[in-house]
Image (cartoon, rainbow, N blue to C red; front, side, top):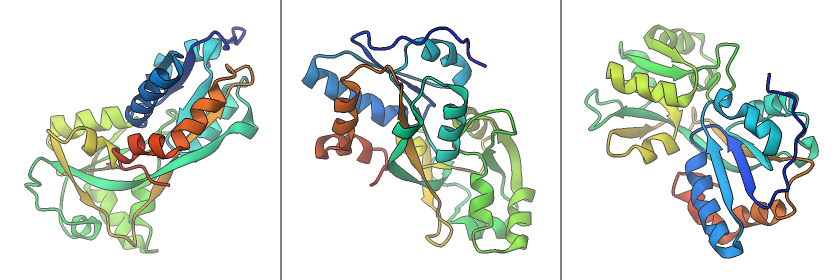
Length: 241
């Protein structure tokens, strides 16, 4: 649990905390907003254990990569206003593959027919990550128990968090990793990706919640990320509205 120090945001600096992945688009938007408003914006991202204590003291906003993740943040951080939490963008799940797609993967159905090595992201009951249950949702989308069984047989690693999943995927040179589109887009020099079939495709959102004592300019920033200009920074990472 984070330290229960008195939460005091509203210090003239807009501070955001959340997981790695969504932060790349948020940082681009934050830089643009800072130039326009002359207000410093700091985005801190990564495993929650690395920012939880500081966020408990000065966060204006906390972001999450899925609604189930935001629900956990609202439970953990009482300084957040639950009524302010809402999704701003959606992104799709894809299949990350090694550069050049050497295993010639062309979709989920292909992976269910062949003994391919697959990495998935899971919270494993103790870690808040947007990837929890993603592989199961994809495999079970068509109500086929055999599909779920087949994909589980192919999983070689269940990693806590997308960053850890990416590292394991590259270290093992696994055939595939079920993840969010912004990960291969931001690592395009190292990995490629294959689309998941439309009937199996899963979307989850970027959700943001505001601290009760957030800096007043927070609302301007939230309006900016939804603006046509703000949307361009998210579109680069595959986020849609």
